[in-house]
Length: 567
Image (cartoon, rainbow, N blue to C red; front, side, top):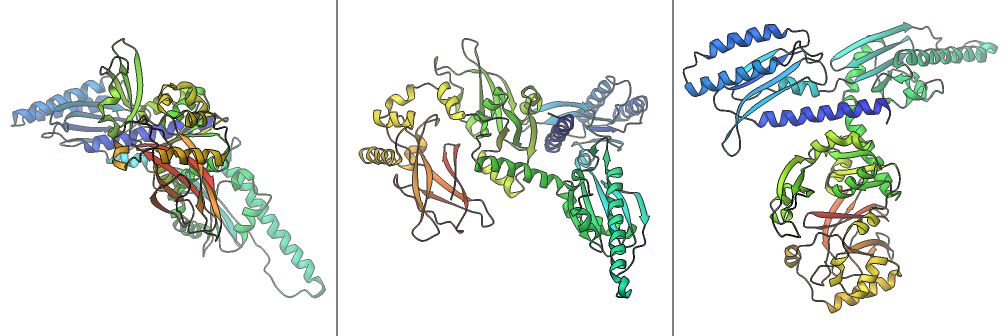
Protein backbone atom coordinates (compact mmCIF):
# COMPACT_ATOMS: atom_id res chain seq x y z
CA UNK A 1 0.00 0.00 0.00
CA UNK A 2 1.48 3.42 -0.98
CA UNK A 3 1.83 6.10 1.67
CA UNK A 4 -0.71 8.31 -0.11
CA UNK A 5 -3.27 5.48 -0.17
CA UNK A 6 -2.60 4.72 3.50
CA UNK A 7 -3.08 8.38 4.46
CA UNK A 8 -6.32 8.58 2.46
CA UNK A 9 -7.62 5.42 4.14
CA UNK A 10 -6.70 6.72 7.61
CA UNK A 11 -8.53 9.95 6.88
CA UNK A 12 -11.62 8.08 5.64
CA UNK A 13 -11.65 6.04 8.85
CA UNK A 14 -11.35 9.20 10.98
CA UNK A 15 -14.21 10.82 9.06
CA UNK A 16 -16.37 7.72 9.53
CA UNK A 17 -15.64 7.70 13.27
CA UNK A 18 -16.65 11.36 13.56
CA UNK A 19 -19.85 10.66 11.59
CA UNK A 20 -20.68 7.79 13.93
CA UNK A 21 -19.91 9.93 16.99
CA UNK A 22 -22.11 12.76 15.72
CA UNK A 23 -24.97 10.34 15.11
CA UNK A 24 -24.79 8.93 18.65
CA UNK A 25 -24.33 12.36 20.29
CA UNK A 26 -27.27 13.88 18.41
CA UNK A 27 -29.52 11.05 19.59
CA UNK A 28 -28.50 11.52 23.25
CA UNK A 29 -30.81 13.42 25.59
CA UNK A 30 -30.52 14.23 29.27
CA UNK A 31 -32.59 15.50 32.18
CA UNK A 32 -32.07 19.17 32.92
CA UNK A 33 -29.03 21.00 31.55
CA UNK A 34 -26.31 18.60 32.58
CA UNK A 35 -24.75 17.89 29.16
CA UNK A 36 -21.60 19.91 28.47
CA UNK A 37 -20.26 20.58 24.96
CA UNK A 38 -16.76 22.09 25.03
CA UNK A 39 -14.66 22.88 21.95
CA UNK A 40 -11.22 24.50 22.30
CA UNK A 41 -9.50 25.86 19.15
CA UNK A 42 -5.80 25.05 18.53
CA UNK A 43 -4.22 28.29 19.80
CA UNK A 44 -6.27 28.59 23.00
CA UNK A 45 -4.90 27.93 26.50
CA UNK A 46 -5.88 25.04 28.79
CA UNK A 47 -5.39 27.33 31.82
CA UNK A 48 -7.96 29.83 30.50
CA UNK A 49 -10.54 27.09 29.97
CA UNK A 50 -9.82 25.64 33.43
CA UNK A 51 -10.44 29.06 35.02
CA UNK A 52 -13.65 29.46 33.02
CA UNK A 53 -14.89 26.04 34.24
CA UNK A 54 -14.07 26.99 37.85
CA UNK A 55 -16.20 30.12 37.44
CA UNK A 56 -18.99 28.04 35.90
CA UNK A 57 -18.81 25.66 38.85
CA UNK A 58 -19.44 28.55 41.22
CA UNK A 59 -22.37 29.77 39.12
CA UNK A 60 -23.90 26.28 38.90
CA UNK A 61 -23.81 25.96 42.68
CA UNK A 62 -26.69 28.46 42.77
CA UNK A 63 -29.08 26.33 40.66
CA UNK A 64 -32.23 25.86 42.73
CA UNK A 65 -33.19 22.39 41.52
CA UNK A 66 -31.14 19.98 43.62
CA UNK A 67 -31.15 17.16 41.03
CA UNK A 68 -30.19 19.46 38.16
CA UNK A 69 -27.57 21.25 40.30
CA UNK A 70 -25.83 18.00 41.22
CA UNK A 71 -25.91 16.76 37.61
CA UNK A 72 -24.40 19.98 36.27
CA UNK A 73 -21.71 20.08 38.96
CA UNK A 74 -20.83 16.45 38.24
CA UNK A 75 -20.55 17.20 34.50
CA UNK A 76 -18.31 20.23 35.12
CA UNK A 77 -16.11 18.16 37.44
CA UNK A 78 -15.80 15.42 34.79
CA UNK A 79 -14.83 18.03 32.20
CA UNK A 80 -12.19 19.47 34.54
CA UNK A 81 -10.75 16.00 35.08
CA UNK A 82 -10.56 15.45 31.32
CA UNK A 83 -8.68 18.72 30.83
CA UNK A 84 -6.07 17.64 33.39
CA UNK A 85 -4.99 14.96 30.90
CA UNK A 86 -3.67 17.70 28.58
CA UNK A 87 -0.77 20.09 29.23
CA UNK A 88 -1.59 22.10 26.12
CA UNK A 89 -4.25 22.21 23.42
CA UNK A 90 -3.48 19.60 20.69
CA UNK A 91 -2.48 20.72 17.20
CA UNK A 92 -6.01 20.41 15.77
CA UNK A 93 -7.82 21.62 18.91
CA UNK A 94 -9.75 19.68 21.53
CA UNK A 95 -13.36 18.47 21.70
CA UNK A 96 -14.92 17.39 25.02
CA UNK A 97 -18.42 16.04 25.70
CA UNK A 98 -19.40 15.24 29.29
CA UNK A 99 -22.72 14.67 30.99
CA UNK A 100 -25.43 12.26 32.04
CA UNK A 101 -27.75 10.93 29.34
CA UNK A 102 -30.95 8.92 29.57
CA UNK A 103 -30.87 5.60 27.69
CA UNK A 104 -33.77 4.04 25.77
CA UNK A 105 -34.50 1.91 28.84
CA UNK A 106 -34.89 5.08 30.92
CA UNK A 107 -31.65 4.53 32.83
CA UNK A 108 -29.05 7.24 33.41
CA UNK A 109 -25.61 6.80 31.87
CA UNK A 110 -22.50 8.98 32.20
CA UNK A 111 -20.75 10.01 29.00
CA UNK A 112 -17.16 11.32 28.97
CA UNK A 113 -15.61 11.85 25.53
CA UNK A 114 -12.48 13.82 24.66
CA UNK A 115 -10.52 13.70 21.40
CA UNK A 116 -8.42 15.70 18.96
CA UNK A 117 -10.29 16.16 15.65
CA UNK A 118 -8.72 14.91 12.41
CA UNK A 119 -8.25 18.48 11.15
CA UNK A 120 -8.07 21.93 12.84
CA UNK A 121 -11.32 23.13 14.35
CA UNK A 122 -11.56 26.92 14.55
CA UNK A 123 -14.64 27.11 16.76
CA UNK A 124 -14.68 28.07 20.43
CA UNK A 125 -17.70 26.68 22.27
CA UNK A 126 -18.96 26.06 25.80
CA UNK A 127 -22.60 25.09 26.26
CA UNK A 128 -24.49 23.42 29.08
CA UNK A 129 -27.78 22.07 27.73
CA UNK A 130 -30.10 19.05 27.67
CA UNK A 131 -28.37 17.86 24.49
CA UNK A 132 -24.89 17.75 22.99
CA UNK A 133 -24.12 20.35 20.33
CA UNK A 134 -22.40 18.82 17.28
CA UNK A 135 -22.77 21.57 14.67
CA UNK A 136 -19.03 22.37 14.71
CA UNK A 137 -18.19 18.68 14.22
CA UNK A 138 -20.57 18.49 11.26
CA UNK A 139 -18.72 21.41 9.67
CA UNK A 140 -15.50 19.39 9.95
CA UNK A 141 -17.00 16.79 7.64
CA UNK A 142 -17.64 19.33 4.91
CA UNK A 143 -15.18 18.70 2.10
CA UNK A 144 -12.02 20.80 2.20
CA UNK A 145 -10.51 19.20 -0.88
CA UNK A 146 -8.46 21.58 -3.00
CA UNK A 147 -9.46 21.95 -6.65
CA UNK A 148 -7.40 23.56 -9.39
CA UNK A 149 -8.87 25.93 -11.98
CA UNK A 150 -7.31 26.93 -15.30
CA UNK A 151 -9.15 29.77 -17.08
CA UNK A 152 -8.02 30.27 -20.71
CA UNK A 153 -9.18 32.65 -23.40
CA UNK A 154 -7.63 34.69 -26.21
CA UNK A 155 -6.44 37.40 -23.82
CA UNK A 156 -4.60 35.30 -21.23
CA UNK A 157 -4.76 32.56 -18.62
CA UNK A 158 -5.42 32.35 -14.89
CA UNK A 159 -4.43 29.60 -12.45
CA UNK A 160 -6.37 29.32 -9.20
CA UNK A 161 -7.43 26.95 -6.44
CA UNK A 162 -10.63 26.46 -4.48
CA UNK A 163 -10.61 24.84 -1.04
CA UNK A 164 -13.84 24.80 0.93
CA UNK A 165 -15.07 28.39 0.72
CA UNK A 166 -11.63 29.88 -0.01
CA UNK A 167 -10.55 30.74 -3.54
CA UNK A 168 -7.02 31.80 -4.39
CA UNK A 169 -5.48 33.13 -7.59
CA UNK A 170 -2.03 31.55 -7.91
CA UNK A 171 -0.89 33.19 -11.14
CA UNK A 172 -2.21 34.94 -14.22
CA UNK A 173 -0.67 36.30 -17.39
CA UNK A 174 -1.83 38.13 -20.50
CA UNK A 175 -1.21 37.13 -24.09
CA UNK A 176 -1.66 38.80 -27.47
CA UNK A 177 -2.72 36.37 -30.14
CA UNK A 178 -3.25 37.37 -33.78
CA UNK A 179 -6.87 37.29 -34.89
CA UNK A 180 -8.17 35.44 -37.92
CA UNK A 181 -8.36 37.59 -41.06
CA UNK A 182 -8.67 37.13 -44.79
CA UNK A 183 -5.89 39.52 -45.79
CA UNK A 184 -2.32 38.79 -46.79
CA UNK A 185 -2.60 37.69 -50.39
CA UNK A 186 0.26 35.32 -51.11
CA UNK A 187 1.34 35.58 -47.43
CA UNK A 188 -2.04 34.43 -46.06
CA UNK A 189 -0.80 30.89 -45.42
CA UNK A 190 2.32 32.26 -43.70
CA UNK A 191 0.16 34.45 -41.45
CA UNK A 192 -2.05 31.44 -40.65
CA UNK A 193 1.02 29.38 -39.73
CA UNK A 194 2.30 32.17 -37.47
CA UNK A 195 -1.11 32.39 -35.83
CA UNK A 196 -1.24 28.62 -35.22
CA UNK A 197 2.33 28.69 -33.90
CA UNK A 198 1.51 31.41 -31.37
CA UNK A 199 -1.61 29.52 -30.26
CA UNK A 200 0.49 26.36 -29.91
CA UNK A 201 3.10 28.20 -27.82
CA UNK A 202 0.33 29.65 -25.64
CA UNK A 203 -1.11 26.18 -24.94
CA UNK A 204 2.40 24.84 -24.24
CA UNK A 205 3.11 27.64 -21.75
CA UNK A 206 -0.18 26.95 -19.93
CA UNK A 207 0.60 23.21 -19.81
CA UNK A 208 4.08 23.87 -18.38
CA UNK A 209 2.77 26.29 -15.75
CA UNK A 210 0.05 23.79 -14.79
CA UNK A 211 2.77 21.28 -13.90
CA UNK A 212 4.59 23.96 -11.90
CA UNK A 213 1.51 24.95 -9.88
CA UNK A 214 -0.41 21.69 -9.52
CA UNK A 215 2.34 19.10 -9.12
CA UNK A 216 4.55 19.09 -6.03
CA UNK A 217 7.27 16.49 -5.43
CA UNK A 218 6.00 14.47 -8.41
CA UNK A 219 2.48 14.30 -6.91
CA UNK A 220 -0.64 16.14 -7.98
CA UNK A 221 -1.54 18.54 -5.14
CA UNK A 222 -5.21 19.04 -6.07
CA UNK A 223 -8.18 16.67 -5.91
CA UNK A 224 -9.43 17.66 -9.35
CA UNK A 225 -8.98 20.14 -12.19
CA UNK A 226 -11.56 22.36 -13.89
CA UNK A 227 -10.62 23.71 -17.32
CA UNK A 228 -12.63 26.78 -18.28
CA UNK A 229 -12.63 29.32 -21.09
CA UNK A 230 -14.65 31.09 -23.75
CA UNK A 231 -13.00 29.50 -26.79
CA UNK A 232 -11.53 26.12 -27.76
CA UNK A 233 -8.32 26.61 -25.79
CA UNK A 234 -9.53 24.50 -22.85
CA UNK A 235 -10.36 21.63 -25.21
CA UNK A 236 -7.01 21.94 -26.97
CA UNK A 237 -5.23 21.87 -23.62
CA UNK A 238 -7.11 18.81 -22.35
CA UNK A 239 -6.36 16.89 -25.56
CA UNK A 240 -2.80 18.12 -26.01
CA UNK A 241 0.19 15.79 -25.64
CA UNK A 242 1.94 18.66 -23.86
CA UNK A 243 -0.54 18.47 -20.95
CA UNK A 244 0.89 16.21 -18.23
CA UNK A 245 -0.88 12.82 -18.04
CA UNK A 246 -1.04 13.06 -14.24
CA UNK A 247 -3.08 16.25 -14.59
CA UNK A 248 -5.20 14.90 -17.45
CA UNK A 249 -6.50 12.13 -15.19
CA UNK A 250 -7.57 14.77 -12.64
CA UNK A 251 -9.72 16.81 -15.06
CA UNK A 252 -13.28 16.75 -13.70
CA UNK A 253 -15.04 19.05 -16.12
CA UNK A 254 -14.62 21.45 -19.05
CA UNK A 255 -16.64 24.63 -18.49
CA UNK A 256 -17.68 27.32 -20.99
CA UNK A 257 -17.50 30.78 -19.41
CA UNK A 258 -18.32 34.20 -20.82
CA UNK A 259 -15.28 35.97 -19.39
CA UNK A 260 -11.59 35.49 -18.80
CA UNK A 261 -9.53 36.33 -15.72
CA UNK A 262 -11.06 36.55 -12.26
CA UNK A 263 -14.61 37.04 -13.50
CA UNK A 264 -14.24 33.83 -15.47
CA UNK A 265 -12.82 32.14 -12.36
CA UNK A 266 -15.92 33.08 -10.34
CA UNK A 267 -18.24 31.94 -13.10
CA UNK A 268 -16.36 28.64 -13.48
CA UNK A 269 -16.75 27.96 -9.74
CA UNK A 270 -20.51 28.48 -10.02
CA UNK A 271 -20.89 26.31 -13.11
CA UNK A 272 -18.71 23.51 -11.70
CA UNK A 273 -20.33 23.53 -8.24
CA UNK A 274 -22.31 20.33 -8.84
CA UNK A 275 -19.25 18.44 -10.08
CA UNK A 276 -17.15 19.63 -7.15
CA UNK A 277 -19.79 18.55 -4.64
CA UNK A 278 -19.92 15.11 -6.20
CA UNK A 279 -16.21 14.31 -6.33
CA UNK A 280 -16.49 11.81 -3.45
CA UNK A 281 -19.67 10.61 -5.11
CA UNK A 282 -17.80 10.03 -8.39
CA UNK A 283 -14.91 8.26 -6.64
CA UNK A 284 -17.43 5.96 -4.96
CA UNK A 285 -19.16 5.17 -8.26
CA UNK A 286 -15.80 4.33 -9.89
CA UNK A 287 -14.78 2.07 -7.02
CA UNK A 288 -18.01 0.06 -7.05
CA UNK A 289 -18.04 -0.07 -10.85
CA UNK A 290 -14.53 -1.54 -10.70
CA UNK A 291 -15.92 -4.14 -8.28
CA UNK A 292 -18.80 -4.94 -10.66
CA UNK A 293 -16.33 -5.21 -13.56
CA UNK A 294 -14.37 -7.88 -11.68
CA UNK A 295 -17.61 -9.83 -11.28
CA UNK A 296 -18.75 -9.40 -14.88
CA UNK A 297 -15.36 -10.56 -16.19
CA UNK A 298 -15.47 -13.50 -13.75
CA UNK A 299 -11.88 -12.90 -12.66
CA UNK A 300 -12.45 -14.49 -9.25
CA UNK A 301 -10.64 -11.49 -7.71
CA UNK A 302 -13.62 -10.37 -5.64
CA UNK A 303 -15.55 -11.45 -2.57
CA UNK A 304 -18.85 -10.50 -0.95
CA UNK A 305 -20.73 -11.27 2.23
CA UNK A 306 -19.37 -11.25 5.77
CA UNK A 307 -18.04 -14.83 5.80
CA UNK A 308 -16.15 -14.78 2.49
CA UNK A 309 -14.80 -11.28 3.08
CA UNK A 310 -13.41 -12.26 6.49
CA UNK A 311 -11.85 -15.39 4.95
CA UNK A 312 -10.24 -13.21 2.29
CA UNK A 313 -8.86 -10.86 4.95
CA UNK A 314 -7.40 -13.76 6.92
CA UNK A 315 -5.67 -15.00 3.76
CA UNK A 316 -4.23 -11.52 3.15
CA UNK A 317 -5.94 -11.58 -0.25
CA UNK A 318 -8.12 -8.47 0.18
CA UNK A 319 -6.52 -5.38 -1.33
CA UNK A 320 -9.52 -3.05 -0.92
CA UNK A 321 -12.22 -3.71 1.66
CA UNK A 322 -15.51 -2.05 0.65
CA UNK A 323 -18.19 -1.59 3.31
CA UNK A 324 -21.43 0.36 3.53
CA UNK A 325 -21.08 3.11 6.13
CA UNK A 326 -24.34 2.00 7.81
CA UNK A 327 -23.62 -1.75 7.80
CA UNK A 328 -25.79 -3.26 10.55
CA UNK A 329 -23.74 -6.29 11.56
CA UNK A 330 -22.37 -6.99 15.04
CA UNK A 331 -19.32 -9.12 15.86
CA UNK A 332 -19.98 -11.34 18.91
CA UNK A 333 -17.27 -13.10 20.89
CA UNK A 334 -18.93 -15.99 22.75
CA UNK A 335 -17.56 -18.47 25.29
CA UNK A 336 -18.90 -21.98 25.65
CA UNK A 337 -18.91 -24.08 28.82
CA UNK A 338 -15.32 -25.22 28.12
CA UNK A 339 -14.08 -21.62 27.89
CA UNK A 340 -13.46 -21.88 24.14
CA UNK A 341 -14.13 -18.63 22.26
CA UNK A 342 -16.54 -18.65 19.32
CA UNK A 343 -16.88 -15.64 17.02
CA UNK A 344 -20.10 -15.05 15.09
CA UNK A 345 -21.49 -12.14 13.08
CA UNK A 346 -25.18 -11.25 13.10
CA UNK A 347 -27.61 -8.54 12.07
CA UNK A 348 -30.06 -7.10 14.61
CA UNK A 349 -32.78 -9.29 13.14
CA UNK A 350 -30.67 -12.41 13.58
CA UNK A 351 -29.84 -11.43 17.18
CA UNK A 352 -33.50 -11.99 18.09
CA UNK A 353 -33.11 -15.69 17.30
CA UNK A 354 -31.44 -17.02 20.46
CA UNK A 355 -30.62 -20.32 18.74
CA UNK A 356 -27.51 -18.60 17.33
CA UNK A 357 -26.15 -18.37 20.89
CA UNK A 358 -26.64 -22.08 21.67
CA UNK A 359 -23.57 -24.34 21.75
CA UNK A 360 -24.37 -27.29 19.45
CA UNK A 361 -22.32 -29.76 21.48
CA UNK A 362 -23.57 -28.97 24.99
CA UNK A 363 -26.92 -27.47 23.92
CA UNK A 364 -26.27 -24.66 26.46
CA UNK A 365 -26.41 -20.94 25.79
CA UNK A 366 -22.94 -19.43 25.39
CA UNK A 367 -21.76 -16.39 27.34
CA UNK A 368 -21.31 -13.13 25.42
CA UNK A 369 -17.83 -11.92 26.40
CA UNK A 370 -17.66 -9.09 23.86
CA UNK A 371 -19.78 -7.41 21.21
CA UNK A 372 -18.69 -4.70 18.80
CA UNK A 373 -20.16 -3.35 15.54
CA UNK A 374 -18.33 -5.03 12.67
CA UNK A 375 -17.65 -1.61 11.12
CA UNK A 376 -15.76 -0.54 14.26
CA UNK A 377 -13.80 -3.79 14.23
CA UNK A 378 -12.84 -3.20 10.59
CA UNK A 379 -11.79 0.39 11.39
CA UNK A 380 -9.52 -0.88 14.18
CA UNK A 381 -8.05 -3.92 12.42
CA UNK A 382 -8.00 -3.38 8.63
CA UNK A 383 -4.28 -2.53 8.76
CA UNK A 384 -3.55 -5.91 10.33
CA UNK A 385 -4.62 -7.52 7.04
CA UNK A 386 -2.75 -5.11 4.73
CA UNK A 387 -5.99 -3.83 3.19
CA UNK A 388 -7.34 -0.42 2.22
CA UNK A 389 -10.70 0.39 3.83
CA UNK A 390 -13.30 2.26 1.76
CA UNK A 391 -16.66 3.38 3.14
CA UNK A 392 -19.45 3.77 0.58
CA UNK A 393 -23.01 5.10 0.70
CA UNK A 394 -26.18 3.86 -0.97
CA UNK A 395 -26.90 7.22 -2.60
CA UNK A 396 -25.56 6.31 -6.05
CA UNK A 397 -27.15 3.68 -8.27
CA UNK A 398 -24.01 1.54 -7.94
CA UNK A 399 -23.91 2.02 -4.17
CA UNK A 400 -27.56 1.09 -3.80
CA UNK A 401 -27.02 -2.08 -5.86
CA UNK A 402 -23.96 -2.97 -3.76
CA UNK A 403 -25.92 -2.58 -0.51
CA UNK A 404 -29.08 -4.39 -1.66
CA UNK A 405 -27.40 -7.11 -3.65
CA UNK A 406 -24.19 -7.83 -1.79
CA UNK A 407 -25.23 -6.97 1.75
CA UNK A 408 -23.05 -3.86 1.81
CA UNK A 409 -19.75 -5.70 2.28
CA UNK A 410 -17.20 -7.02 -0.19
CA UNK A 411 -13.64 -6.74 -1.36
CA UNK A 412 -11.31 -6.48 -4.34
CA UNK A 413 -8.67 -9.21 -4.12
CA UNK A 414 -4.98 -9.28 -4.97
CA UNK A 415 -5.33 -12.74 -6.48
CA UNK A 416 -8.04 -15.27 -7.29
CA UNK A 417 -9.50 -17.18 -4.34
CA UNK A 418 -11.89 -20.15 -4.67
CA UNK A 419 -14.22 -19.54 -1.72
CA UNK A 420 -16.43 -22.51 -2.63
CA UNK A 421 -13.49 -24.86 -2.10
CA UNK A 422 -12.64 -23.15 1.19
CA UNK A 423 -16.24 -23.52 2.36
CA UNK A 424 -16.39 -27.21 1.45
CA UNK A 425 -13.10 -27.86 3.21
CA UNK A 426 -14.20 -26.10 6.38
CA UNK A 427 -17.75 -27.41 6.72
CA UNK A 428 -18.89 -30.78 8.04
CA UNK A 429 -20.16 -33.30 5.51
CA UNK A 430 -22.79 -34.71 7.86
CA UNK A 431 -25.49 -32.37 6.62
CA UNK A 432 -25.55 -34.16 3.26
CA UNK A 433 -26.39 -37.54 4.73
CA UNK A 434 -30.13 -36.82 4.50
CA UNK A 435 -29.97 -36.15 0.76
CA UNK A 436 -30.49 -38.73 -1.96
CA UNK A 437 -27.23 -40.41 -3.00
CA UNK A 438 -27.66 -39.46 -6.62
CA UNK A 439 -28.21 -35.79 -5.79
CA UNK A 440 -25.39 -35.89 -3.24
CA UNK A 441 -22.95 -37.18 -5.83
CA UNK A 442 -23.88 -34.44 -8.31
CA UNK A 443 -23.89 -31.89 -5.56
CA UNK A 444 -20.34 -32.59 -4.40
CA UNK A 445 -18.66 -33.22 -7.75
CA UNK A 446 -20.66 -31.03 -10.17
CA UNK A 447 -19.00 -33.34 -12.71
CA UNK A 448 -22.06 -34.12 -14.81
CA UNK A 449 -23.57 -32.86 -18.04
CA UNK A 450 -26.15 -30.09 -17.82
CA UNK A 451 -29.05 -32.15 -19.19
CA UNK A 452 -28.36 -35.04 -16.81
CA UNK A 453 -28.30 -32.70 -13.84
CA UNK A 454 -31.60 -31.09 -14.83
CA UNK A 455 -33.17 -34.55 -15.33
CA UNK A 456 -32.06 -35.72 -11.90
CA UNK A 457 -33.38 -32.58 -10.26
CA UNK A 458 -36.71 -32.92 -12.07
CA UNK A 459 -36.97 -36.57 -11.02
CA UNK A 460 -36.19 -35.71 -7.42
CA UNK A 461 -38.68 -32.85 -7.58
CA UNK A 462 -41.49 -35.05 -8.88
CA UNK A 463 -40.95 -37.77 -6.29
CA UNK A 464 -40.79 -35.34 -3.36
CA UNK A 465 -43.65 -33.57 -1.69
CA UNK A 466 -43.85 -29.89 -2.48
CA UNK A 467 -42.96 -27.49 0.33
CA UNK A 468 -45.01 -24.32 0.76
CA UNK A 469 -43.29 -20.97 1.19
CA UNK A 470 -44.48 -20.80 4.82
CA UNK A 471 -42.99 -24.22 5.54
CA UNK A 472 -39.72 -23.21 3.90
CA UNK A 473 -39.41 -20.12 6.07
CA UNK A 474 -40.02 -22.23 9.17
CA UNK A 475 -37.26 -24.75 8.41
CA UNK A 476 -33.88 -23.97 9.96
CA UNK A 477 -31.19 -24.19 7.29
CA UNK A 478 -28.02 -22.12 7.22
CA UNK A 479 -27.49 -22.66 3.48
CA UNK A 480 -24.06 -24.21 3.85
CA UNK A 481 -24.67 -26.34 0.75
CA UNK A 482 -26.54 -25.94 -2.50
CA UNK A 483 -26.91 -27.39 -6.00
CA UNK A 484 -26.51 -25.10 -9.00
CA UNK A 485 -27.89 -25.88 -12.43
CA UNK A 486 -28.88 -23.80 -15.47
CA UNK A 487 -32.37 -22.85 -16.60
CA UNK A 488 -33.49 -21.33 -19.88
CA UNK A 489 -34.93 -17.83 -19.71
CA UNK A 490 -36.81 -16.31 -22.69
CA UNK A 491 -34.83 -13.54 -24.38
CA UNK A 492 -36.31 -10.30 -25.65
CA UNK A 493 -35.42 -11.57 -29.13
CA UNK A 494 -38.08 -13.84 -30.57
CA UNK A 495 -37.26 -17.53 -30.38
CA UNK A 496 -34.09 -17.04 -28.33
CA UNK A 497 -33.39 -18.02 -24.74
CA UNK A 498 -30.66 -17.13 -22.28
CA UNK A 499 -29.12 -19.50 -19.78
CA UNK A 500 -29.00 -18.71 -16.05
CA UNK A 501 -27.63 -20.64 -13.08
CA UNK A 502 -30.23 -21.42 -10.42
CA UNK A 503 -29.50 -22.80 -6.98
CA UNK A 504 -31.55 -25.41 -5.16
CA UNK A 505 -30.83 -25.87 -1.49
CA UNK A 506 -31.38 -29.36 -0.01
CA UNK A 507 -33.18 -29.21 3.31
CA UNK A 508 -32.79 -31.67 6.16
CA UNK A 509 -36.32 -32.86 5.43
CA UNK A 510 -35.17 -34.24 2.07
CA UNK A 511 -37.05 -31.58 0.13
CA UNK A 512 -35.50 -29.13 -2.29
CA UNK A 513 -35.92 -25.46 -1.57
CA UNK A 514 -37.88 -23.60 -4.23
CA UNK A 515 -35.87 -20.39 -4.35
CA UNK A 516 -37.38 -16.94 -4.39
CA UNK A 517 -35.70 -15.13 -7.27
CA UNK A 518 -35.19 -11.46 -7.90
CA UNK A 519 -33.84 -10.67 -11.36
CA UNK A 520 -32.37 -7.22 -11.75
CA UNK A 521 -31.17 -5.61 -14.95
CA UNK A 522 -28.28 -3.21 -14.39
CA UNK A 523 -28.51 -0.61 -17.13
CA UNK A 524 -30.29 2.65 -17.93
CA UNK A 525 -33.63 0.80 -17.81
CA UNK A 526 -33.04 -0.64 -14.34
CA UNK A 527 -35.97 -2.56 -12.95
CA UNK A 528 -36.52 -5.34 -10.47
CA UNK A 529 -39.31 -7.86 -10.28
CA UNK A 530 -39.86 -10.81 -7.98
CA UNK A 531 -40.99 -14.15 -9.37
CA UNK A 532 -41.24 -17.72 -8.12
CA UNK A 533 -39.60 -20.66 -9.81
CA UNK A 534 -42.30 -23.24 -10.55
CA UNK A 535 -40.16 -26.03 -11.95
CA UNK A 536 -36.54 -26.92 -12.52
CA UNK A 537 -36.53 -25.87 -16.14
CA UNK A 538 -37.88 -22.43 -16.81
CA UNK A 539 -38.78 -19.13 -15.23
CA UNK A 540 -40.34 -16.24 -17.10
CA UNK A 541 -38.25 -13.07 -17.32
CA UNK A 542 -38.78 -10.50 -20.02
CA UNK A 543 -35.89 -8.01 -20.21
CA UNK A 544 -36.72 -4.51 -21.40
CA UNK A 545 -33.58 -4.35 -23.51
CA UNK A 546 -32.19 -6.79 -26.06
CA UNK A 547 -28.86 -7.05 -24.26
CA UNK A 548 -28.69 -6.62 -20.51
CA UNK A 549 -26.56 -7.60 -17.56
CA UNK A 550 -28.29 -9.64 -14.88
CA UNK A 551 -27.84 -10.49 -11.26
CA UNK A 552 -29.89 -13.41 -9.97
CA UNK A 553 -30.42 -13.38 -6.26
CA UNK A 554 -31.56 -16.34 -4.18
CA UNK A 555 -32.74 -15.21 -0.79
CA UNK A 556 -33.71 -17.27 2.25
CA UNK A 557 -33.96 -16.27 5.90
CA UNK A 558 -31.83 -13.21 5.41
CA UNK A 559 -28.95 -15.10 3.76
CA UNK A 560 -28.12 -14.26 0.15
CA UNK A 561 -26.19 -16.05 -2.58
CA UNK A 562 -25.44 -14.42 -5.90
CA UNK A 563 -24.69 -15.93 -9.28
CA UNK A 564 -23.48 -13.90 -12.23
CA UNK A 565 -24.29 -14.22 -15.90
CA UNK A 566 -24.61 -12.03 -18.95
CA UNK A 567 -27.19 -12.26 -21.67
